[in-house]
Length: 100
Image (cartoon, rainbow, N blue to C red):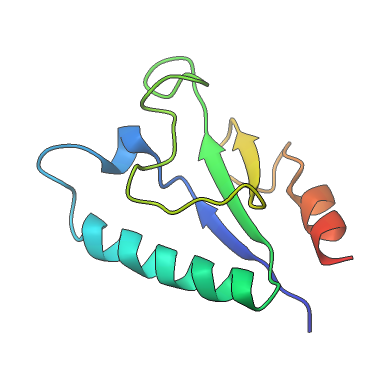
């Protein structure tokens, strides 16, 4: 079986606020642990970032991935403009290319 690790919307504008929402620190730690294990196993790591014209403008500080995440150059990034990560994004192409 081939797989990929997909992390969705863990962005500064959504989780890096004071006070931190819920258990954001623990979730970031879990994401980092899983990402590290995935990379070691040769499993692609894909970060999906939501974008909108108001709070999450592409390139803005809020749009960036959370500072708590350990992101590597080899990781994939996908932008999305709808709540659904598979609608009008390149995720299917990225996954197909990454697992070949």
